[in-house]
Length: 176
Figure (tube, rainbow, N blue to C red):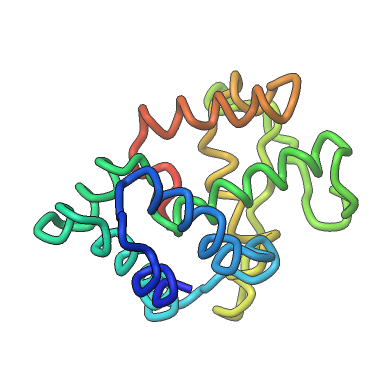
């Protein structure tokens, strides 16, 4: 898809290129991301190369490093988007808005500590490395690091807005 965009589009303004990327490329990369998410660093790098290649296609961006290109374009890294999608799905599961039953995958922590929020989840011990990459394991640490204000949001849109605010405050929140 990137090759088609690069060959066929002559007027490569930022607005046109972002629209094409968001409608033609990113859906392929992010399809079923909560079920399949790369666990190994080499796989994450391969997937991220797609967005790196795209950001270099925009005129005036080739000389910048990848993080500054993302900031200038207003994009998140694909790893951050995958983790955000995981958190949104978990929020929907906790609040009964998604099909998989929350109780089948997660256990709410019974500890009442002074730090954190009231919806903390139990992080299970994993013997196998591959098990750590399952949705029910990889999302727990990030979920437990969120604030009470965010996890107690009244709707999915409010949750997304508060998640965005937390991301802006804690830049490495959505990084593995």
